[in-house]
Amino acid sequence: MVKPFDEVLTSVADVEGWMSPDQARRLYDAARTAAPGQRIVEIGSFRGRSMIVLASAAEPGVELVAIDPHAGNDRGPQEIEGFVAEAQDDHAVFNRNLAAAGVADRVRHVRSFSDAALVDVPGSVQVLYVDGAHRFAPARADIRDWGNRVEPGGTMLIHDSFSSVGVTLAILRELMWSSQWRYVGRARSMTEYRRDLPAGLGAKVTNALRQLAQLPWFVKNLGIKVLMSAKLGGLLSKVTGRPAEWPY
Ligand SMILES: C[S@@+](CC[C@H](N)C(=O)[O-])C[C@H]1O[C@@H](n2cnc3c(N)ncnc32)[C@H](O)[C@@H]1O
Image (cartoon, rainbow, N blue to C red; front, side, top):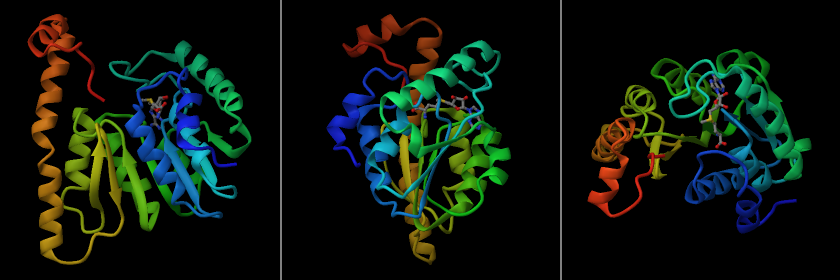
């Protein structure tokens, strides 16, 4: 059964993760566009926060695939390697959280790296959510290789866009000057792209400019990250009058 958005948001309130409520709304609305028989794929599921939103919004008959090796790499901000024990917990908690939300039966978990999962999960995708490894090379490969699986008119959402360096460079390389992906907008760092860019140079240039317009926000995010990494978050909140927050 499809749950109303507010109920879904409440159901993930205690599930750890970095997805904000406005980003949950984007995921929810994207999942609603998938018809029975179509497929939603998430790369990077962690403890299930975003997958619960996708699975709770999707119509019965939509296939849901969560790809996450739970191997201890690229686990979260500044957790790139060496988190194997924590990832074992993530795996157990992921299963528990999906069961508690009543969506465990709907989701196929592929416990592989996203490049290997291309073989495990054949066929096309209606909605793709990219939130796995945030370094340039794997993020670029996800956008390119999994993005190629998205049907015309389908949607790709990418977390940590214009906030993580690797993801942003991957976007600039693969999507800024694309002939197929139209930039729709973003909820904080979650960008939304539609595979329906009209043909022609004008559409391409407009699309590139709309993405380049996000770069000042990217620079601001980098500044916040540098200050917070240097333990200067207190100074930042004094200047802005708000608690310093890692940008997502
Ligand atoms: C930022 S977390 C995902 C958060 C999740 N989308 C949410 O909102 O709750 C990143 C996840 O990506 C996974 N990951 C890392 N490298 C990956 C890869 N190459 N393919 C798929 N998942 C990967 C990690 O195990 C981790 O659980």
